[in-house]
Length: 405
Image 1 (spheres, rainbow, N blue to C red):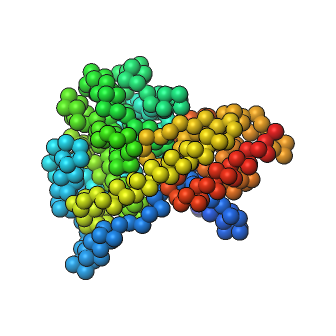
Image 2 (cartoon, rainbow, N blue to C red):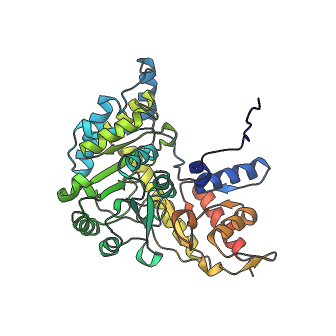
Image 3 (cartoon, rainbow, N blue to C red):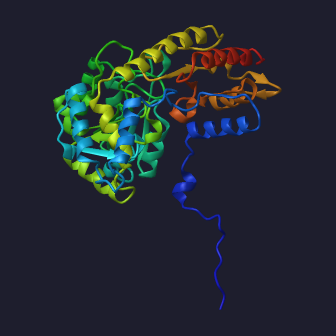
């Protein structure tokens, strides 16, 4: 009798076909170079450099002392979901019940829960481009078909309601976008969202996933607008938010949705088979974050605005770059296409990926290629770091570009 043997390298088609996150890949490359002794400035990840505010950390310590160390309900503690209901009403004029709230291990899991709950194989998922890298990966994992709606720096990387409608077909199931946007920092105005709502309500089979994780980092001077505020489409809209950006709580891994009840129940069911309830300590910290005043958040936002203005001035001084002034988040997404076709050491640079690797190796700065975000002209730069590092980054970038022939 012979025993069948199988090579250890066999993996599923879905994992073989899945792209590694470009932001995580670049961060990994920069860590490897740092380990080799290189002085790398890593601006690849979207992570505030501020520490979590003290009152939030105190709430976590208190939770440990009070014994919040057991399994939690799948959709989250009742107290946290009540705090999220309060936040939606206070900040967004949205009325939800706690049954419409599902807390997850980061907003990324919230997004995945929604996509897997509504997308069938072959369904079309609309992605205004540029878009966050994981939207497409998650949609493709659910066997959806991604349909990009391209925008450019000339339109501040925003699509119009008319452009959106041109891409809707009977197979369209889900629209995913963020405002403020990762990677561009663009913010959709109330009038722009109202126009989108008028289109969405004409297609009852269409859901919209609105990623509002950067809600508090908004420089427009206007109140943040949620698409779900337009009552005619509220039952089609799932709002995703979390704590990582506005509260500097990236490592706490805490996100949530406000959604129509049947969507929330579906996400609860999905999560129950994947991770169950998220970390008890993080949830108590999140509750404290939402119920306190936002003074500490506002201090961080003021610093982000200061950095944005400084970096904008520095980037404008680099020949060949096309730069716009982002209205939110903490990224610049600038056009480097003027350098396509140029070379260094006989190596021709034809894509943003080529340029990002050139800047990593020659400029010792880690930025992310726009190709991962559905754009073939740009690079993303996070400015969530100190002014000294940002100034040095722009200095190195200008010097590196001057090497190209």
